[in-house]
Image 1: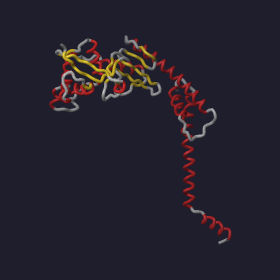
Image 2: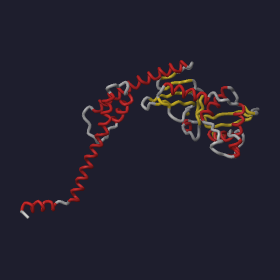
Image 3: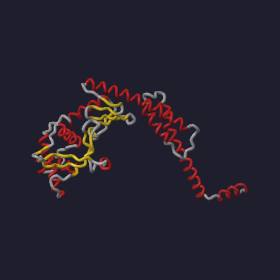
Length: 300
């Protein structure tokens, strides 16, 4: 073996390959981390650049990019003026989203008008009779509520025809049901009586409206369910239906059953937001009260 090759072998032998491997792994980790940090900003930057070619059509993409850039990794060194540029981007996105929101509301108002219906409210929160239509341009969807309860299981797509169809469906389902209010009041009185027995309280005691509502659902079940409980025979009574029926009882002043008057007790602020203890009962599209108690008193 030559002196030169011997020296090379000696140098190689002096290096611990396991240590070298660990060092290279650390270098890779650091560089990969930097790449990951940078990609968290580079990708939304590229999206913003593409979206700016047609900011009106791509307003949602601009808003998403602006939100991502606003939350850049704190460990990443950013160029001077970065925050100002991002604020400008958010401003453009908000402006374009407002334009889209206004245009959608205009088209929706026109579509409702063709059906003989009137929409009021702001472009972001429209009112159709007792229903509130909230437009979310960023998520490209619409939420429709009655008495602060969603009337659809799924979000409605940002499409005029679909929103109109959803409203008509919800109105038929909630407002155009055939309801015998006298029978409903009798069932509610029965439900109240059942909860009284369960709690050991006397007639006139204030009971949780949530508990009474749950018992009312059971009272309203058909004979087939009582004989053999099953999902197939269960008759649902959703909260929007209950809220609407309670509204009709009050509007038509049908609050007395066989000498017993129905009363509702409002909730305090801290209880109102707790759905396990209170329910919001609408008196209009955006008006109503959080109700905590339900009770019957004997009229003299």
